[in-house]
Structures are given as C-alpha cells and as structure tokens.
Length: 476
Image (spheres, one colour):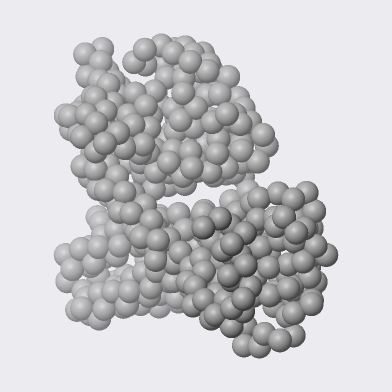
C-alpha cells in the first residue's frame, strides 16, 4: 500500500483517526503555515497540564508559549532569554530540532519539532521521566563509585572525602567559566565538564601506596622520600587505566587516569612525572592542578594549619605561568573570588566552642552554605547539585567528628545531640532527592533560610552546651 492510498483510507475515517491520535503515548500538536494551532491530541493536554482544549484551536503558538512562560511552566526555557524568539526563527527557517524540558512537577519531556510539507509544523512530546531518572541514578552511582575509590587513598586525611568533592567543584566551576568565555571549544562541552569534574575526584588515588611516614612527614622530604612520593602519579594512572578497561573503557576512569598522571606537571615543564609543558599537559590535568593546590593550601592537614583564602589566592597568582596555565588561573581566580558575594551566615567569635578543629569545621560549613546561596542566585543547577553533595558529605564527617569528641569528653546529652544531627542529615538528603529529580527546580528562600537558621542556632545553641566538657588539651 503506497502512502497516497493509506492517506485516503485515513481521511475516510476521521473519527477513528481522532481516536487513534488520542490513544498515542506521545503528545502531538500541529500548526498551520501561519503557526496557529490546528490540532492536538488528548495526550498533549495531559503532558502539558491543560484542563481545557477548545480555546487552543486557532491561537498563535507564540501566544501559547508566552502564556506558558509567564505562568512558570517553561522552567528550563525561562533561563534562556530569547527562547520564544528562537523557536519562531527555527520554524520560519523550516528547521528540524529537538529539546528536552522539565515541567514544574518534575516530568521530563522530549520535544521533537518538524516542518510539514503543507507549510505548518508538528511537535511531538514524549514523557522520558523514567529514562531520565534511570540516567541520573546511573550518573550518581558512577560518582559514588568514584568517590568510594578515591576515599581509599584519602581516608587518612582529616576531612575524608570532602577534599575531593571540593576539588571536583572547583574543576567544574572553572571549566564552565572557560566554556562561557569561549576557551578550548574543541574540548569544553557540557558532557566533558561533567566528566572531568567527577574524574578529578580520583587525582590522588595513587597515594594509597604511599607510606604514612612519608605522606605525613612534618619536615622536608629527602631525595629518596621525594621520589617515593612522586610515584603516586604513575601508580594512580596505572590503577585507573586498568579499572577503565575492566569497566568497558569508562570515561570517568579514563579521564581520572589522565588527571592522576598529569596534575603534578608544571606549565613551565618543571613538574613531574614526565616534565610536560604548556598544552602538552591535558586540560584536565591543568584544571585539577589548580584546584588541588588551592584546596590543599586552605585545608587543615595533620602536618599543617590552613592558609587564609587571600593568602592562597596570592600564591596561585604568583605561580601563574610557571606552575599553572595563566588562562586557567584567570578563570579559576574569578570563580574563587566570586564565591562569597552572598553571605547568609557570618562567623562570629561568640560561635566558638573552644576547640580549634570544631571551630574550623563550623566555618567550612558556613562557607559552604554561603556558596550554595551564591550558586542559587546565579541559577546554576549543576553547581548547586555539587554543593549539596559536598554539604552532605562534610556534614556527616563533621557530625561524626563532633560526636566522637564529646563522647570522649563524657558529655551526658550525647544521644540527644546525635538525634539532632541525624534529623538534619535526613532533611538535607530529602532536599537533594527533590532537587536531583526536579520536583524542586530551585532550592528557594525557604530552604536557604532554614539552612541559615539551623546552622546558626545549632552552633550558638546546642553546640555551646558541650563546651564546658572540652578541655584545653583537645585543641592540640
């Protein structure tokens, strides 16, 4: 049966045609040559959340898009200033195009747009929420696996897991800014940025083979010790390359191997293990080198106290062109210097509980919440998601550290304190669930306000109650 015969049979059964269209899983709306709505099926109404359908016929599609935009229906597209104008331009140019958008209720729709020979246009809408959730779970599982792998090498640090997540965020934010500025266009697409940020978590996995006597030596290393320490770059790359092959050439692990091998190379060629210089060093290694050094400088380690942010920024600036790529440095410093434009909470001396480590951890939590508010204002979902993960990871670490400390001090209300901590962890994990699967598109002022008030009140309230039980020697 040719197309003409089939079309003739369809036109002889209009009622059946309508019934068939209404039973399709895909929503359909078609426009005439003037881009006015000519027809649609019931699935379209259901997927778009419309209760009435008659008023749609004959209306310009532009009006409908504008109405949906004004009502908040076009969440994703509300970020794009010229979305409606761009849609009309594509239709006028008779282009085929495709997009994915998310409704306020979290439904993920794939929209295919095709020109018709008659001069009109047809849009098909498919609910891909299940596939989207499965992909997100796969992505999160991959990240969790990477973090777990990295923790084998990082477990001896004072803030297990938090360092690698902070490095990942710095890498992701810097790469995103470089992309916006038009640098490295042959490398920096959205997929690469997501992958390189996650892969950077594995940068020091080779340290699992480094002896503690070398890793935590307070003084300078001798030549033999330095050579042993430097071996972690090649060790990590080898382990990750082998793992990548076993996992069907995992992009995360392959990039992780590249980063592990090259993040100690210097831009001027004086790094290790291979003395690479300039663009011989993969962009992934240049990005991670900066993030790793900055976070190491500003974090407490068993062998050193943390540097002040401004001191670390000055050090990075001084090393631009020698240890670090100047182009990457410029973007990196803009990211770091722009992080604290919004301050929901400010540290005050009266928040001190009399313990240096706890006070530093509280300040890190305050900085993380402030950075979360800053990313929210910039409407950067990817960075917000990374900060939420970072916040959960560090909160769990801090709570455990604090509970162990006050348990050793004989604090009588430990169990009540622990229940308060557990309640907060359950709450923030629920927020992450809603945000990840887009039933909450933005955190909003209510969530940020709760975070601000909970942390401030907890530090000034419950945490002050155990202060008399902590002895001065705990600060050592």
